[in-house]
Image 1 (cartoon, rainbow, N blue to C red):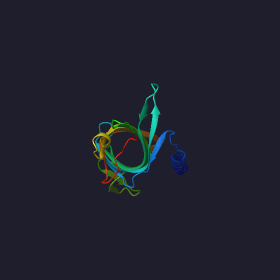
Image 2 (image 1 turned 90 degrees about the vertical axis):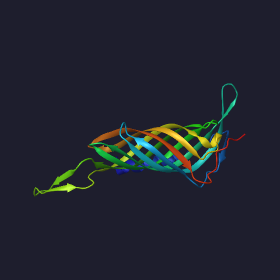
Image 3 (image 1 turned 135 degrees about the vertical axis):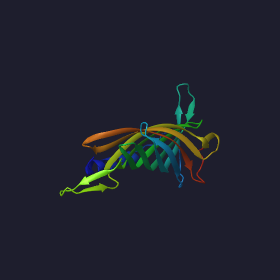
Length: 214
């Protein structure tokens, strides 16, 4: 991904955010000035890792969805900006540390069950496994510390979870999420790797609890 494509991605994401329209039969709720804290087990295929992040609420509203039977279904839609740092360890290959920023779209049902989707962009830094040596023009061999590479990175992810604040008045959520990480250029090719998350989201003290409008 060159600089021009990177800039176009950011601009496109901003336009999508600005053009986001509110449902006709919905009630807008002012977002909290506080934030959510995230922690999860982050596994790339069978390789272990971890991920930490924060979510900044941007908007929340309660659209009323009419079913075919005539009944009205009430849900909560959240839009959040997220910043995350992730890591996984691939034995005998590399460790991958990556920082991303993204736009999270979360849809919560009255029973607390939710689904979400989040595109993200960021930067990856790999660390080559084992000892790496370098030979200069004079044939001198030296050890390279923290050998690895930087890569532009983007990912898309979707997941499910449960919000305990709706029914049990607890300020946390649990979730399972699958992300597809893409790095380029990686050895002159496109490198794609799935990553699984299983974690918890905690609302900071004083964060408002979601309430369905009557």
